[in-house]
Image 1 (tube, rainbow, N blue to C red):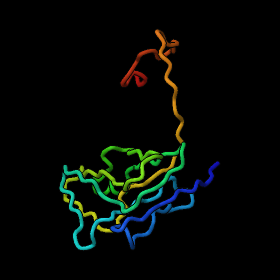
Image 2: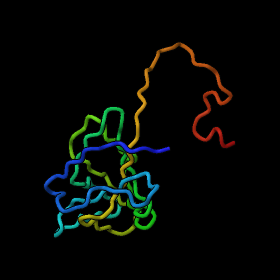
Image 3: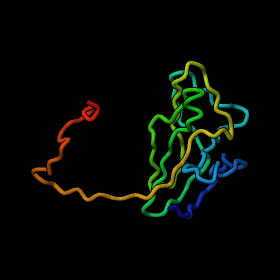
Image 4: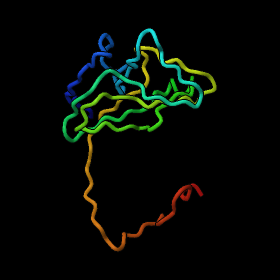
Length: 152
């Protein structure tokens, strides 16, 4: 089951002329974020380099929601370009520009041009936890088995 939530979006001056983020298919989970770099000067990401790429938008998420900034699979598979802090989190009380921290894991420079789809933004509800200090935890079959312990 899915439903719509209204998100106010402000297009910043350097984002003018770009379309607002949108879903690319009827059942897509993420809205595509676009690069709001200047038309004349694409951002060149050398191999191993990272850059904070502007999107030219800010949002007003309702309380109880977050926006997750995630990589686009096509950029990752074709060029090795991905979101470095994936998923990035946009909190409901943040009103600044959404920027995307990209890194080039590929072996060739990658040009980020104005309007290029650079990441996707997934709107998700947030469940806040109340942590309760306790001297012991309930036991489970797994116990304290960590990294790789369930693959034996």
